[in-house]
View (cartoon, rainbow, N blue to C red):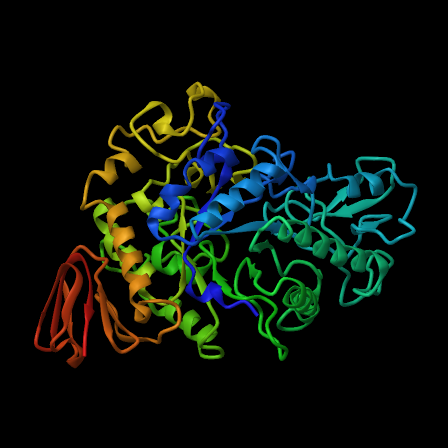
Length: 532
């Protein structure tokens, strides 16, 4: 069984915005190949790509029309194979995003059922009803009804997952008490489970190391409502995991979110603390991208005014780690679905404390492209490919082009600026990789230094214990009983006392002092000490 994820450091690439090799204004795989040395220089060993498959891009590629073909705007399947090979030469694995719960309406599976006169004799791949069901099903964002009238010859309605153009795949229902509800063992749901295996095998054979699964627990639709732990969906993924462990034992499967706990062993190799959920938001999010229904209107802990708390995060951390201390938990700097590490009023000066925490806490860290140089979330950008789900939630600002240098379009593309996927940050002082390479005090150099330290120091990695000594300002914790980490995200100084500080030897220090038992941290200070 694969164990490498426990020691991994991930780097998320939104392919539209990373590097454009052909000058059409949209990023592509050959652009990524040309920038692999930068990724390797960080100390990263795993790339996670947002969806790269063929799509009409109603929802930025999360509406797949062909799982077995790279979207032409990104290149070809051969380009992906070459990218995987070139990344492998640098010790980097590649994870792809698997959209498991729905497809595009342009997918041939949907078109076949749309143009049929009735149910597919082999079992419907999608959920169809002759009339709009009286029992509603809440698809969630963007907030429109879940049932969509058929736009083709087939009469009736189909169930969607998100946008109307994303029909939900049929994985069955816990309660199959209406004609449009199949049991999970019926032919349609079983066809779809096999299809997931076929898609995964296709890319495993081409060197991909695993998948992050979008909406992983959305498959059996009334599962979560019927019982805690989404038991039928979890069983489905355990079946797939069992197949993987036999056929592809070194591959990994990562969910979107944390895996619901059941009495059975987990199906996924890790939990993922999502940027849009409270455990991450309580630390970092200034809600520059907007708010979602479950967000609490509280300042984050990494807040210059020092008004936040670590309690929400720590409660979630202990909930997953107490049950299984060896299970990896992925924590990102940011991602494609919300804002960036540098968002709202957060300044570059504040990033050092954040990065010290992210890279030493004991999670599997994931760096969102551009966060390693402190790219800003840009408010007020236009809607592009479904980025504005509702008027109060804009994802465009975290999807802007990577800032490589001071050349045209920040080195992202040679295209006319009007053709870019999204505008480049217009600030003349915007951070770039080239400028930060020349500055030894830059965010980029700090990230590299911390990751090199993590690699060289097992106590700072994903296998050692983490014990909190002080959960306010400053946050202080022991890693593996050999290293003390102190971060003070607020503007004002902060301090505390601990006998573990005696004889502490500085490893990385910025604005933190130790005298006997006393630890004092200047505003935005951070430090790693060797102790004992």
